[in-house]
Each structure stands twice: as structure tokens, then as C-alpha cells.
Image 1 (tube, helix red, strand yellow):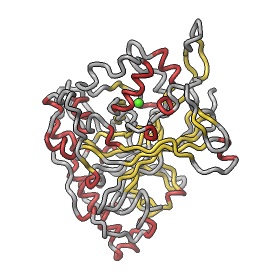
Image 2 (cartoon, protein in one colour; image 1 turned 30 degrees about the vertical axis):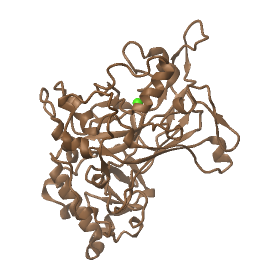
Image 3 (tube, protein in one colour; image 1 turned 180 degrees about the vertical axis):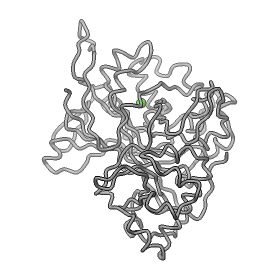
Image 4 (tube, protein in one colour; image 1 turned 120 degrees about the vertical axis):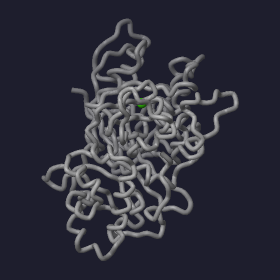
Length: 431
Ligand code: CA
């Protein structure tokens, strides 16, 4: 299935009668991300973000295409995600029409809720969560901390590396993260101990939401992989570095990672991101070409995403002093060594069945520059180089009360910029 095409929904001159959408940094009418929300005490339901408002899709279902109506009655988007992307495109076009047609205002406006009055939930019932490791600068930086002589293992440029994470501990933005207890052993400790992690970190990642799945035993060809992606969120893979260092060999991440994962609640569709696709950066000549099952000319030409990524922190002390958020990093999503399509195809290449609503993390997205690092482990060089914060504090790793927020925006000349909304959580003390 080809990458989605541009249509009238991307028209930069299109505006909405929802006035807050026009010029909105995240949710102009060109975005239309899907999510699950509760207006006040009412039950969770599917909605679309438009400016500062959320449109209740159930309430306007009589205006929507027949094929999608039956997918809107649950408290998750799995049914909608499972549809072939052609139906999602039809829904997007209808919503864009509804929200830009002044004559429909009186009929539709009662189904809009102020986002600030709503609770936002996980967009999907997540069956499985897998985290990859495709940020090559992150992999190199972290590898150098753990293995100075051998930062990238020999398989890295052949295999999109990943591990199976835990779906049950994924939470939407806003749910606090409790500092985990765990087993750790510092370089000067004779024996390991058990207690609160002293090296709690965040990881800036993109989350890929699986759309239509594949049957067990039936791989997804690289040329069809885009059609199996329902959309994208931001993802924070909270990490206890001291636990990780002690436990990760020989089987990889376990309790250092699975205590909490935060996602932004809005699913930004591949259709909305169509104007912001770009070529996969060329590999250095000394690197191997992807094996044939991961190589597709169209994917190489426009399968990467050009997103501006930012991480902010606000500490307890900064809150007390009313200081604005401090920018920890600014980078780009073009630092991925493998495209989302290559990730999906590799995951299913052994016949593993992906299912609608499965969540896939890209791995930490660090840029090559010092200001573009996607984790404190890298910024603070493994805890050896504290960063100064406004208000006189320093950090090597996170402290209780710290709030970390991930942001992503897509910007390109000639199109209206769109954003993902916040992926944010505050650290609470260990139990
Ligand atoms: Ca990760």
C-alpha cells in the first residue's frame, strides 16, 4: 500500500469554524488526531482534537461514513485502528469537511467539549508493547558508556534491535510515575542492594500504533507496512539506569523498564503526517545495505518522518519559584536508522502476528549534536556531568517532583504545522 497522498484535508488555506483551531500549535484542522476521552463524569469514548476542543465522534456518528460508525461504540480505538486505512482516510475527509463547513456549526457544536474539562485515556487496549532501539546516536552514546571500545554491536546495522516490553504499565500523559524499587549494584558496592532507583531517567521516543494486523505466520511485506500503521504518539520509556546496568545481561531490559511507560493520548495519523514525510537519510558508504526484505524504494524515498522533538523539565523548586520549563533537548526524528515501515516489517518477518492497538516504541531519538540528546543518561554522561537548572539546582538523573514533558511538531514550508500534544508525567517518591 502506498504512502498516503495529499488531499484537500492538507490544504493550508482550509480553516475551521472552531476558532481555536486556526493557528493552534498542535491541533489545527490539518491534524485531526484520534483519541479516547471522557467529557466530565461520562464514559470514555472516541474523539478528535480540534484546537482547544474535542469532538465527540459518537455524538456525530450519523454524519460519518457507514464503515466507521460501528467502530465507535467502545472505550478504545482498536476497532477503528483495525480498519483498512482507506476507511480512516474517508473518516478524515468527512471530519475535515464537517469542521470546516460553517453551515454545519449549529448541528455539530453541541458535540464539542473543551479539552481542559475532559479526561484523556489510553487510545487503545494495548495487547502487546515492543520497544526498538533505532536511534543510532543514542545506541552509540549508550553503547560507549557501557562498552567504551565497542559501542555498536556487530548486528546493529543489520537487525532493527528490539525487546518485548510490558503493555500493562503503559499510561497516558498526566499519570504520575512512581520511582521504582529495584536491585542495583554500584561499581564500589561489594554486594547488590534493593531500594529506590537512584538513577531514574526518561527516554524520548515515538510510539507507533499498529493498525490492521497480520495473521500468525504471515509476514508483512515492506511495501505494505505503512498500511499497517494507524498513527503515532510520543512515548517516554522511563528507565531505572542502576537497575538496568545490573540486570540487562544476558537477556536485556526487564524491571528497569517495565514499571511505567507514558504515551501522549492523541494518535496522529499517517495521513496527517503525509506532508512531513522525508527520505530516509543515506547510510554512510561503509554501512551495509538493508537486507532485501527491509528494502523498498518508496520507503527509502519518503518513509522517514521529519518531526521537531523537544524535552522540557520542571522541578519542584522551579514550580515554587514559578520558573518556566527548562529545555533539556531539541532534536529531530530523522535520527532513526530504520524507518517505521522497516520496524513493522522486521517485527512480523518471522510470522509474529501484530494486532490492532499494539504499541511499538522506536527507541530513544537522540541527534548527533550535544543539545539533541534524548535521555539524561546521555546529557549527564552516565551521571558524571551534572547539568545546571534555573533556580540553582543540578541534575544527573531525575528527582522526586520532577515533571518531564516530551513535545513533537511537524513543520515544513507550504503546509500548516501540526503537533502531537504533550507527553508528560511527574515523578513521585518510591513506595
Ligand atoms: Ca527505550
